[in-house]
Amino acid sequence: EVQLGESGGGLVQPGGSLRLSCAASGFTISSNYMSWVRQAPGKGLEWVSIIYSGGTTYYADSVKGRFTISRDKSKNTLYLQMNSLRAEDTAVYYCARGQSGYTFFDNWGQGTLVTVSS
Amino acid sequence: DIVMTQSPDSLAVSLGERATINCKSSQSVLYSSNNQNYLAWYQQKPGQPPKLLIYWASTRESGVPDRFSGSGSGTDFTLTISSLQAEDVAVYYCQQYYSTHPLTFGGGTKVEIK
Image (cartoon, rainbow over all chains, first blue to last red; front, side, top):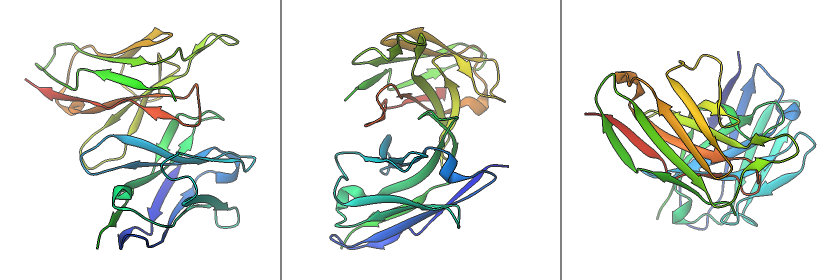
């Protein structure tokens, strides 16, 4: 069974850093396209970043230069390093798996809440 | 960027009646080389992550009830719930994957029981 489980969220001050993790089971993350998608409180879905199976990465303009997506094949875990956090980064962050080499998402984690506030 | 616009923002439908949600993209998401529309639909219930319902605009994900159907092509798409059930109360999102950076979602449509 495919499972994704995020961790690492919490309260951080503006300008601070946080690293989110997404542990995967039932499949190999390095063989799939993996993304982070966030949802601000009471708002819609916003794509944040993607890492392709070949390792190429892309980011939303809103996080480019501040966030870094990566993966650890040995741990089958996806990461999102978030630096220079802003209040507008407050959201639930979901990791999601792209289906069969495409960028629609057939499996999502339960999400981890990041709150940026002083 | 491809902008996805959903309508209405919310709708209330009686149990057993039809619910129709629209999604319009700012440019075509039909890929001519394979004649596929790069459009997906998700359902999100309160406190839960999104769940994939439909991809390629009209292909139902495994396990999704057949009362859910997707249609449309190019820039205009529709998600239809043919006979609304109580468990279908949720927010529904469309997403284009024609242009993958950035991937973009519609603003969501909240479906409630009348």
